[in-house]
Image (cartoon, rainbow, N blue to C red; front, side):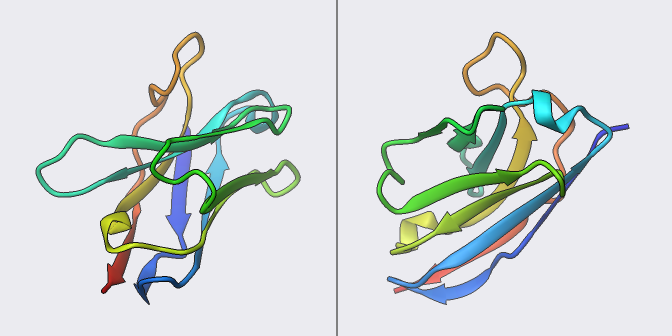
Length: 120
């Protein structure tokens, strides 16, 4: 059974930084493209960043130049370094494996997510 456990969220002032972590189990982590998503109440979940098994990253335009995704195969963990945070980054952040042959579709059930709140 695949489990995705996100952590690292919190309350931060605009311009600050946070580092999110996602521990994955029950999947062949080294073979999966992993991604971060976020969701605010009343809105669709949106893709934020993804990283291929070969460590090629891809970012949503809204976070380019501010966020950095990385992965540690030994720990089966994917990270999201978030810098220069803005109030509009406030959301619950989730990670997932990207379904094969899709651009961003999550492959497994979603975890509990981690709340990021950016104050102005």
